[in-house]
Length: 391
Image (cartoon, rainbow, N blue to C red):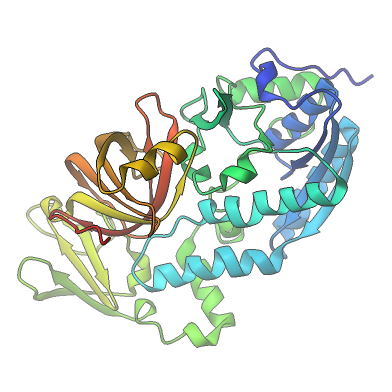
């Protein structure tokens, strides 16, 4: 007999009210399947939804696992086709960014325009009050303000990738795994209740690279073959390696898409001191010593503001606010300041100390001293010199 229960790591405020109808995003993995079991045990009316993003053998296998786990837990299950939207909002921008010398962050786009958009739309269709996922993150409501906070398990925390989700979408979302101390503990819970995916390996960080062994270059090359209008992109062609100091050619490369800002290995040059990729422009890849990567001023665009910051930040137009800034998902938070331009949805982040390897196209997530997400945006410009914030 199936014996479901709510694990000790899950607190009442992380769950929807008992009896709520909840639409749960299911991937076929241990996290979303465990979340299904928790919500069911809590007394929610759960509808598991698999969001179909691609046509591939791995997607079919994941869909089958999701359906099996939904049936095992005893919840309804449905599949929604978002392949066209995924192509438009995630894959095409991903390829375009790499072809323009940027380093994209597709998961943040997917969370906003695909996952939470699809779940909320489906919830509206079936009359569900709430949505849920297996993300490791916390959403709280304090003094009338909704906050997005890092997971207890810092190694699994996904708040960096969720900054772009609209506050209205997050307001309906519940994350039962946000206070799970570790992934092994979640797997152990899955084993206890008999989930067949308890030991299933984690998926690639970028899901659409799974059929390419995680190799984004192979994926882009395959994509370009099917979209011949991109075939002439300079980033796909052989080009020159340029010394950033002298401006002189010091080597050749097989295509700029093979490189990202801050990269050290695989450049194909030998030098007395380590060389890094410090700039990409067309078919030119600029290299230099670590000092050439130094950045202190960063302009971010398409800024999304969360929680109490939505009330506070607009009042500080062109004034500085002390914050902690994070420019890598696994990187530390750096003390600095934020100057926000509400009218243009832009902000200037100034690090207290020089940082290295800040890449255009990635995101900066701005946090409070306690780690709460205040805002985030896409890195549009990075410099060691002052960047003007246009009124």
